[in-house]
Length: 459
Ligand code: ADP
View 1: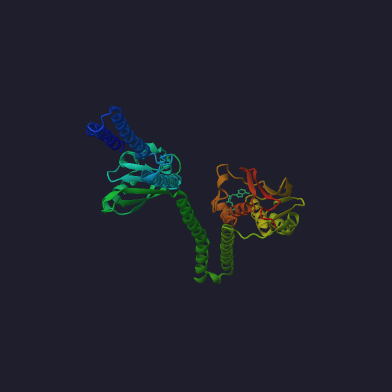
View 2: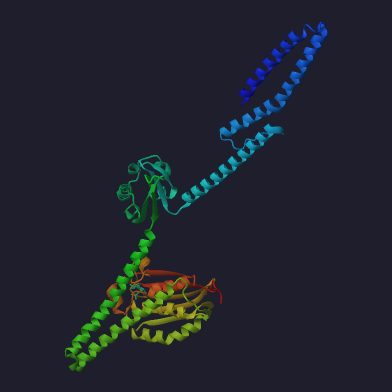
C-alpha cells in the first residue's frame, strides 16, 4: 500500500515538473521580465508543493502507520493498533482496522480460554484419555493415562499406538474399533508388581463431516475399587449361604430321621430335638448379627446418642456375665469406674457383650477374664482381657473382617457367627473411636475400645 502511494507521489512530482516547464514555455513570450516569470513559476511550484505536503500529511503518513499495523496483525500480534488521530477517509479506514484488530484479539482470547479450559479438564480428568489419528499415531494423552501405566506423556505423543501401549488387550480394543468403526467397551486386567488392577476401556471412533474415520478416542476408567466391592459382595453372599447351609442341613437331617421313626425312642428324640434347637438358635444368632451389621453399614447408621453411665451399664449386664463365667469356671475380675460419656447406649452394650462373649468362648475352663471400664484422657475405655488361647500375629489384622475366624471349628462349636468383631469395629467407627488388640498365643488377648467422651454429633 505504501509503495503504491510512493509511486503515485513520484508520478505527481514528475507531473509538477512537467507543468512548470510547460508553464515556463507558455508564459515566456508574454512575460519578458524574467524575474516576474520566475516569481510566477515559483508561485506555481509553491502551490504544488503545498498540495504535496498536504498529501503526505493526510494520506502517506497515516497509510504508513496503517500498513505497519496491518503487517503486525498478519504476524499474529492482535494487540497492534494504529495510534494518533487520523482524519478523513483514511481515519475511517484506521478506525475500521482497529475494530478488526479488537475483534481478532477477542476471538483469540476466547479461543485461548476455551483451549485452556479443555486442557484443564483433560489433564485433571479422573479417567485416562488418548487420541489416536487414522494412521494409528497418538496425538494426545493425559497425565492420568500415563500415570496408570507408570510412564510419562512424552513417551506416547507422536508414536504409533501399538509401539507404546504395551497392554495387548488394549491394542486389540483399538484395532477392533478401527475395523468396525463402532464403539467398543472392554475390561482390561493388569498384573503389575502390586495388587491386580482393573480398567474399563471405551474406544469410540471419530468421523469427519464426510463420514470418514479420522481417529479414535480412548477413555480408560480405573474400576479396581468397584471390582473389589463386587468381589466382597459375592464373597459375602457365598459366606452367608455357607453359614446358613450347615445348620439348615443339620436341622433337616435330624428332622427327617425323627420322621422316619426315631421319635419313638424318647432318649434319641430328646437328643435330636436338642440339636435342632441348638442349630436353630445358631441361625437366629446369625440373622440377628447380620441385621445389626446391615444397620451399621447403612450410609448413616441410626444412632441414639445419650448420656451413658458406663458403670450403670455394666452393673445391668453383670448377672448375665457372672452366670456365663461360672458355667465355664472362669474367674471374673471387674474394675468399674464412674465414667459418663455421650454414646448410643445399646451399641455400647453390644460392644461389651461381643468382647466378653469372645473372651469367655476362647478361654479354657479355670481361666480368667478381666473387664476394665475407666476414663483415659478424653476417652471412655472399655477393656476386656482374657487368659485364653490368644491370636497369632498373622491373623490379627484380619479378625475384624466379616466371617473371618482363626479356627473355624472352635468358633462354630462355641456358637460364634464370625461377625462379632466386625460389628464391634463398625460401632467403634460410628462413634469415631478406636480399637486396639494385644494378643499372645496361649497367653491371652486384650481388646481395648476407646470411645470419645463427647460424641462428634453432640446430644
Ligand atoms: P466369632 O463369632 O467366630 O467369635 P468374631 O468376629 O467375634 O467371630 O471373632 C473373629 C475371630 O477372632 C474368632 O473366630 C476368633 O478366632 C478370634 N477371636 C476373637 N476374640 C478372641 C479372643 N478373645 N481370644 C482368641 N481369639 C479371639
